[in-house]
Image (cartoon, rainbow, N blue to C red; front, top):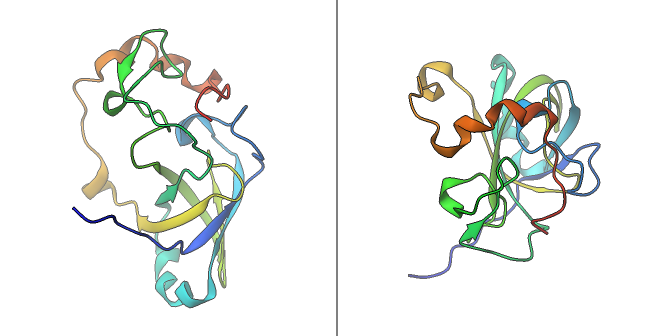
Length: 160
């Protein structure tokens, strides 16, 4: 199969200047505010986005230098397969976060609950629609033991 290339549509601006200390999931970043800068050629794509309270941000984890298929994730001391984790050092370093949309001013989106490092290239924005995106999850795998530690967990630099 041929390689796939993506072109960023914007940049994330956040208070987090490095991975270490960054919340490990958007739900652990309650109230953290940042800005999404959409490049001028994509601004018309923001039409009607203001009608949504939340968005899904898809972005390139640009600081990842190493990929591993088995990792010790942030919320556990055991090794797990990368696809059974949310760890960033993936074969395709793509991140997703659900953030709260606060305001849109031309090409600048103000968001809250941001867990993304400053300067991260943004690949796409999708509206979060509860009827499409919410699922009543019945199994959380190995996370069930430690997911209660999410709000205190921060990146400790192990994946860069």
